[in-house]
Amino acid sequence: MATSQEIVTRAFRRLQIVDALEDPAANDSAHALACLNEMLSSWPADGVGVSLVMAGDVTSGAAVITGLFSTANLFAGMTVSGTGIPASAVIKSIDATTLFAGAITLDQNATVTGTDVSLTFAPLPLAAKFEAAVTALLAVRIAPDFGMEPGPTLLRAAKDGWNMLQAAFIQAPDAKFDTTLTHMPSQRRFDFR
Image (cartoon, rainbow, N blue to C red):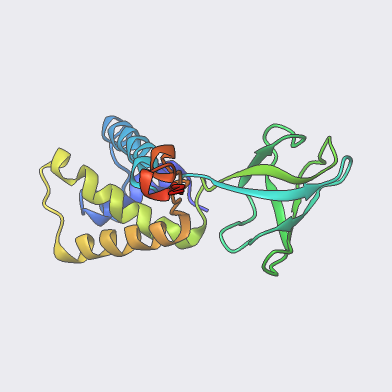
């Protein structure tokens, strides 16, 4: 898993601002890192959550979490938080990938016992399969700041990467019905006696 700094350096290399063996200047790197953080924090407004929320079953004194809906987008090293999960806990291993019966092991033991405990999985650092996507998106974002025009190959990589991230992390808003719609006159029964 790449660090934020490695993603920044790769973005500069994609733009050919630095060569393959060179690192960007400190002030350029700091600017790109700020752009990376802004980009990641803007994703929820586009429906792409930077974290996954899922219910699981935890047992006090045990590091195993069971009963997860899916482990498809989980990976070792992801941070986990929730009731009874120690601060800074991370996934140590993915143990079962069965739909509705996924299981993981944390690097620390839970401090409570409960079923359907709400757990938040932070996808940063990102799994390796998402690194190229984030790198391309960052390169396109910072290109104008450095007087560059992203080429069609980079633009395509960014678009494909964004589609992949949406597919993995899209979060649909909860459906809510306006009470006036459920109490419309057409829904009332009239007594015509």
